[in-house]
Length: 193
Image (cartoon, rainbow, N blue to C red; front, side, top):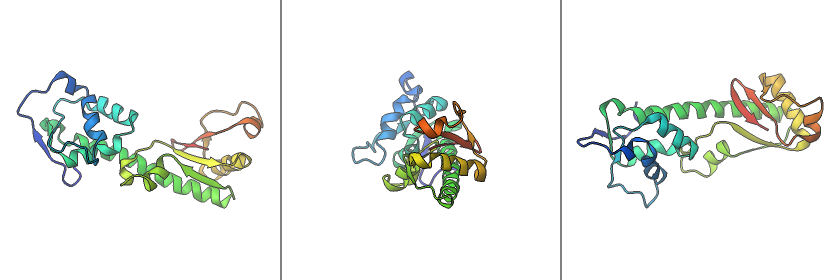
């Protein structure tokens, strides 16, 4: 299902090879919502490699702006690709919602364990800096924990949520003494403490 207002029409003309790699859409997607965005130029997406575009958008942290760009200007797509932007956006947003649900569980566990925390990067920025949280796509949870609370945080998440270490500890007590961060996983999602 397309977001409200997503306008796509079939292209009456061929698309150049440059436009086929997906990178040609990056400037339009990056300028989505800015006063300098060209609303008079349609997005030409007829023969885009959607996997390549998806990788470029994620690499440049523009994934959340794809639907907005397609909503603000007309798009020219092949009939078989008319739903591709909305499907791509929905996939990213489902992942973000999984991470946000896990974040709420993680914070509940850490607060109960008496571990002082600060959420930063992805989820924190999405809800404080961006016009819409959907514009900031993120792939993991980043939580600041005081060095002295790192072991307690890890222990609480292991016992309460079944977290596993993404990387094994070098040796007993190494992380407590020397680690600056610990990467753990819960239900396949990463948490960087």
